[in-house]
Image 1 (cartoon, rainbow, N blue to C red):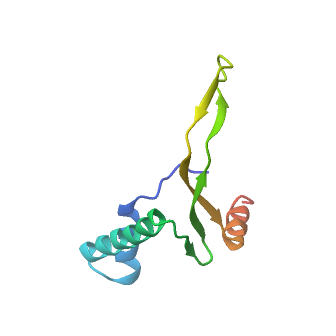
Image 2: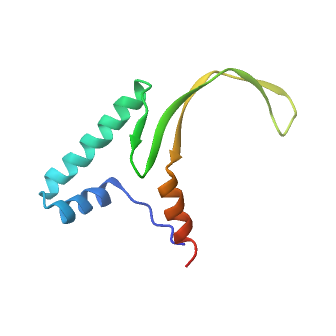
Length: 100
């Protein structure tokens, strides 16, 4: 498996090649999409992309954790965490990619 990371620039370049927008318009489109997704998540909304997966924000309550080195109890503050749940199609596609 390669360790390639897909960046905003890669997404913009793909839009440029596939859709035919200018490079500048492609970059603006990608930025706009990411901004809309981010804004929705900040508002606590789910972002569901068909055949890909669902991004959502989960509220985690306060709890007591433990320092593994010392065993000392440490309070963990309540927080919001971002989660991603892949669709079944995405799971299958990734699993099929591992068979080669």
